[in-house]
Image: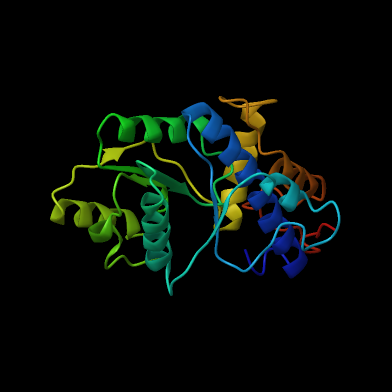
Length: 233
């Protein structure tokens, strides 16, 4: 998002996405009859920030699981190992950068695993994936992946084939990486209305995007005015 958004705006976007993803986690857990867990990559304790911190409020009541490892594959592997080791029959993970991920897609991932699927993958439009679920730690699926590239999904499928696994594929979603993704997100949120399927709506992200739109920053793909783009905040 840099330099299209300045540092303060990037932080505000990250906070909005995280807040909404926590609300999505709780909604999806209710819809799928699953136990929600927050697995985070940075040292953090709810309530350690300013009073009234919306992220701490959104995380209230969630069990916390710190991530460990050098790359995303290591951290995912550790998360699967820890949760399966606690006795959970399956694990479904999703990130904090897909705030309009359908609750029903996450519920479908859980149901597929309950029905005997070994692996569930929700591909992303950029060549990665938004959802990964398994009944055992998917070692082959996490090994040798070119993280952060458009080849993640294909490499994941290749790893599954090496392990003799035929994954259940969910409808494609998308995550937020570039300014143009905010255009897509803004349009989708407007189409959702007050609440999407499952009763969830990304309210914090909606507020951030509406502020950008009022400042003339959206659509991001529009050419800048001769005087240059305006900034919010």
